[in-house]
Image (cartoon, rainbow, N blue to C red):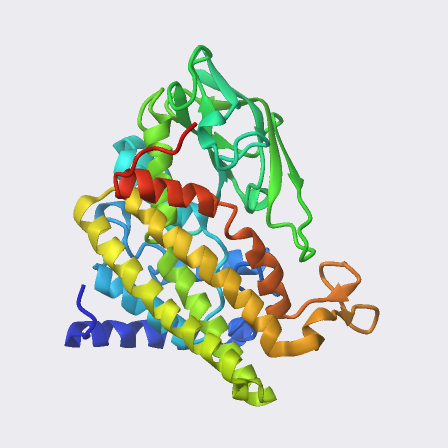
Length: 403
């Protein structure tokens, strides 16, 4: 991966910058510098509209094949896009799970029919997805899933419960890891099904988070129906496909994630200069360490993505990135509280005339939201302990942990 831009990459950056300037005016002007995972300062519906706006410029399909409606952009161009995006203070992206997870999975494992059915609607921003992995007894231990599906004629009937399902209330479809062989155990007998959400057999119950928002949900399936062909990678091969999706979650999608992290760190440095806390030698050292660690995160992720481009399917080494960014962002949340000082412990009264869209009785600023929300990073998507096991056993080849 080369970091010096070519003339063509500079021209591509100009194209991105010009488009953003043209589309971040008018009704979209108020989105600048707002939004992002855990911030909840922009309504999700508004950010979904912004995704559709990006689609009009072809930016959602940046890394998708041309024959499926994408741009087939190089890795360097993808990096340029995300760098230019954050420089323009464009809004933090809503987690577009179809775009970053399901789409790449279909490109790697899906049949041409499934690719042609779903990828155009994903990169046009007209269909959104949620991820049906975690269950009450199958979080980090994903092989313990008990949601089941049985074939009845030409349809799958899905029954079970999923939890921590991000943005399920806005999704038209879910990709669901479930057990299709009732006699199977652990990794065997699992299938990766694509299930429509708008039907009587699906119920979504929001989970109120400590920040007052409800990004996460519980989803209940009661003989929810999907067509027999809506299985990715073939029946019984769901574990391999699910691991591929997790690799994409820890791979290409983090480029966009890091743009938000850079914005957060820059804002924190600005605050530390403004309130004088940067003069504290210990705090200044930790701020600079955070800056250096973010650069390490970026370089490591680009190295991983270079390997991903070469191989097409992510490997277990992608766990390095998940372990690193989850820990880094959690520390950044704690650092933000130190920069703010004692005032960080107090919310602003949300009684009139201040309107609190989350109706939790007080208002949280962006630093407080980052601190609270980032506590979950080292748990969801595979806890830090699980990531260390994956790295030790499947990357370094160390002996398995005693069971």
